Image (cartoon, rainbow, N blue to C red; front, side, top):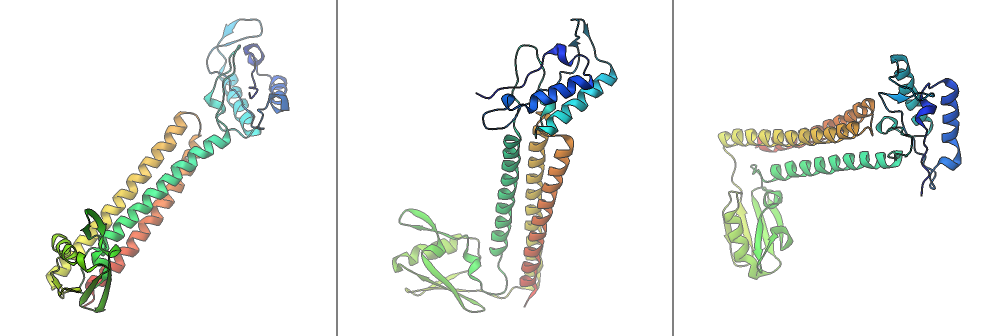
Length: 289
């Protein structure tokens, strides 16, 4: 069982330099550290404290500033960041979250943000791939699902999809009995292409886009891009709220939250740039005749 560092109210009443030095020395004593070497620290309660003679009095502003300075220095010397999150009491000890525990919480928030942003990027990429351009591309069929033996599967998992020329998509099923199901799935999908089933393979002819259709699709991909950016900003907002929650729990300082929020903003900016790159590539495809 870890040994918690405690200090009586009488000891902290005056908060003289000698007392602070004495208590700091006590906290550095190995006997007051936990079995795994991680120290705990308890902070001074704001408000009324007991004096050496047992008289209850409220600390002066100077004493309050001294208390705050003492807490920060004690926490810093022990590698802790939660000195203000606990109280000093006479007869019991209170456990502080360790630096390792707080770092683990911060890491979980960052990992969650990166995972969600990566999924958002993949969603935008998939949406772009499903937008038909004037050229044949296997990517047009990325989201087509086929009912195969009672289960919905991705088309590309049961057939080879290729483009023998710039205007034709060729689908060769691994199991010819699935031709009918594949044809039905393409008709039901939103790819806007009519399948030609010759009993062995399915061909899709990709017509050239009209000028008006190109303009409509350019507007569509721009909207899909903006939707992705909104999703990224929502992830950023959730992450910052999670950091602010740790601040309210006195596990992070306001400076910590600012630095971590800046990191999340940089991550958001990076993913926004990635979406912009995808958008430019798609716009180039749509404008190339």
